[in-house]
Length: 88
Image (cartoon, rainbow, N blue to C red; front, side):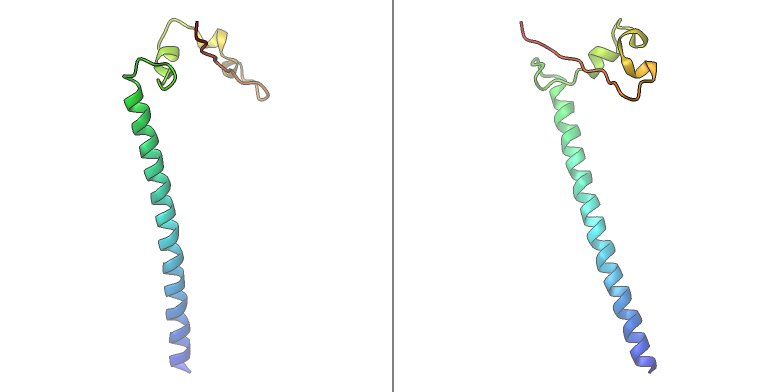
């Protein structure tokens, strides 16, 4: 009887450990994907092309007043600001 209970407890612990291990591997893969994405954005900051360049620094660190031009600053739940960069 004690052997059966201990076997059930051990099998439950092993099953739970496998599940946690799988979850951790999934989180690690997602983290690596995010790191790779961040690395490509960081590299593209030096790029002269606006197709791959992160424009956040240009937009948010310029003379544009976000309180006037960006709808998010007005507190709208239904609207969002979209900025389009067009080639001449």
